[in-house]
Amino acid sequence: MRCWAVACLLLAAGCGAPPGGPRPGGGVPLRVVSYNIHAGTDAVRAPSVPRIGALLDSLRADVVLLQEVDRGTQRSGGVDQLAELERLTGLQGAFAASLESFQGGRYGIGILSRWPIRAARTIPLAVDPPPDRSAGSHEPRVGLLAVLATPAGELHVLATHLDASGTELYRRQELIGLMALAAREVPAGAPLLLGGDLNSSAGSDEAAALRLALQDAWIACHGMAAPAPADGRGAPDAGPTFPASAPVKRIDYVFFRGAVCKDARVPASTASDHRPLVVDLELGRRAR
Image 1: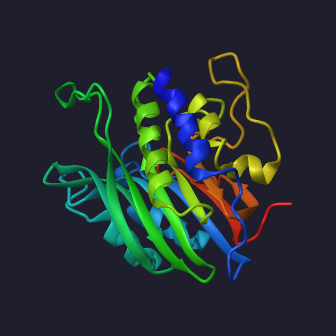
Image 2: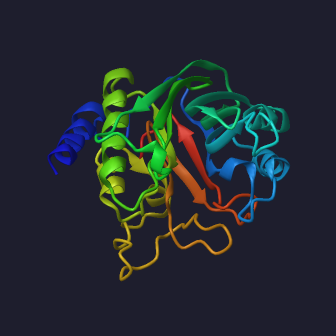
């Protein structure tokens, strides 16, 4: 596809080759969690925000990338899930609505941070043809770009939740939008995290394209090549995150530059229909 070739160019030219150089005050440990919280419910739709909050608190995360977050919706009993997770973890949050009006509230993605959030903004991810909301098969997707004031300096964080349909049509366009944003607004070589639920297997073209510019934390930590495509014949993904009860696919990711990966793991938890991906990085150090 022509647009996919453009995406690869944006990745290579806009974000540079991984990883970025060391930053002043380097060597700062950074624990990142990417977690789809299933609108604050487990796989059988039992409310689980307290369990999710307790898990995140026990993990001692510094940055959390959240997907499927409800704020004041009917199905969630009017609970502001981001505010509740802030309370349970002591972290501060930023939110990006993919649906500004949903069941009397809002729905979208979020970032939790141990460090001050200096700036945060929502980026709509345009696709063509526009998703048909009346059919109930698609929802608008967004990115959330935040700048965090860490002890190692500014850290740019780009969180998202890509389209879940069986075709790659929308996901590839959404990824182009994300990486174009990174190319325009994140300073060249600045430390960057990009992650979330990409709804793409580890052997997908989407994941492969991102690896042109950023390091895939799971592969960086474990030193393994990308697995075979998940086409029903290839090997299962390494580090699977979905479904939570017996995961077989890695669709939740942390990509990065300007850091070194120390560890990556997927703790067993059924507080959501996904398991969390936990990545330990060290900011400001060059990979050897």
